[in-house]
Length: 279
Image 1 (tube, one colour):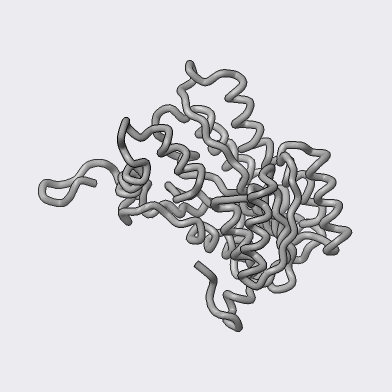
Image 2: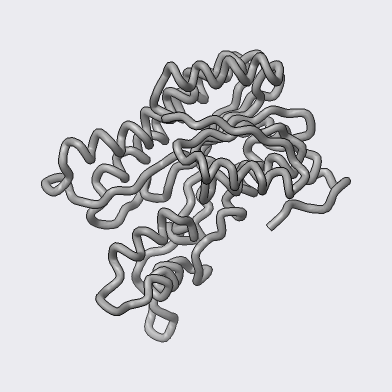
């Protein structure tokens, strides 16, 4: 879904800004890149998936924005420093960092191998640290520097069998709060967005993994959506809209916050009065 029509305040909220988006080859990251581009930002998209990056940059262009891409491992400091240097040389600086790169792996602590633990923490947590470390010098030089970290409701409440993923997202909240305090002196704001279940390729892969024999994974995804009081999964563009707001001057006094975009998932408890529904 595209932002408001051309000429509206929302459509122009990022006019003239430069944004770096990690994990931008698909899902939430791709939707964020498209939204920021449509709202006037020049977007640099980073991911390991070269083909997906090509699709994203095409989508940004089709939405009227400008985008370029870089294939990189977000946890590789040298690579991310090189990308930040290129952004400075090519665009004069950077105003927005959105960290959306993430992976999901399943298992409790006993089942989770050290290799899996390291893999999840490296992408989901170290990748954010590295992207911020490489980009913050540019954001500090901006008059509107903002970092938006895509986290998850599983930072606060989680399902079974997601030990590594939940740990990585919980740590992201602490890291973002620490950055918010440290970077306030430079005028850089840092916030997190915590989505509930979002219809992304990552969630579809999970549905394929856990669907019962003969079950349509799409049906399982619909059941997951029903767990949210709004009765459905989120769309990536709905999360992108929240990211866009937090990255914009409209949120100029918002920092150190976590915004849940979870369809009411964590608002309730699984107890109801007789005759009042099942949630």
